[in-house]
Length: 374
Image (cartoon, rainbow, N blue to C red; front, side):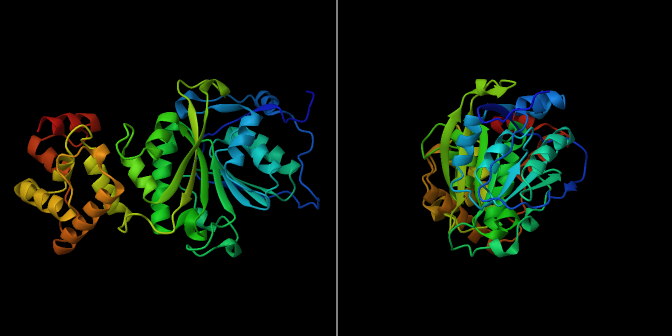
């Protein structure tokens, strides 16, 4: 096979399948270079052919074809010279090459699909001292020990020189960002080092939810949970035809910078419970979602009490509620929970299941149908 240097087109992607556990590959021996430049390498397309790699549809794997696009994704992260970067699911390494070309100090690759490891090792050898490969699942990987301690910044300071970048498969993008948002709230995980920035890809519709404003049709739980903790920017859209295999939807690149102070000063689990309940019935008045926070025996009284304390009009639709509305609801609910510690543990679905005698394996959609009939 003829190897040629690649800066025009190539393929990059993300994967989250493979063996359990994690395997580590040490970095290649450091080399002294004035300015970093990848040596001539097989193109990503040649890597895919060489190792007979195929995107697995059931794992939502899609390879990004154009290195001009991977460069553009990396530029959204900001200045990366001498930065420490974690790439999530590098796949065959398209975005990886763009990150390395930005002259980062260190690049941590977390890849669950073992098929991509040999190609990534080839990149590691081409970038002496810069690349560390972890064969493991980003959902379980302990990132609080991934970077040097001296990179830590106080939360009130500028963000640390640490970045998370990834072309996320659709199947894990939402649970992963929710987990990282909880880490932001708790200032743990990758945010142990300070306000670590993230540049990630999402299905276009998910990106619209993440950035939706009050009253927007895409306003959702994701909108509130992300915007109360981070500055969220929808950077640009990548057309579906740029990927192989081509997904049925376009993809958006979204940049997150954690806020110094969250807009809602309450624990993550409490905020999520309020927000999830409100958007459970997004086509109804917001009071309908608030009702399910309380046992049936005192539902109407407690709902009225909470809405009045929060100064929220019960007939507003969920998408019409501003961040201030949600902050007031969370604060009022927290006060009620402090007065009655058993209140937060109340589970509406469990009460509904008992009342309707639904089997424990009843699907989520079936539960929603039951709820909407009440």
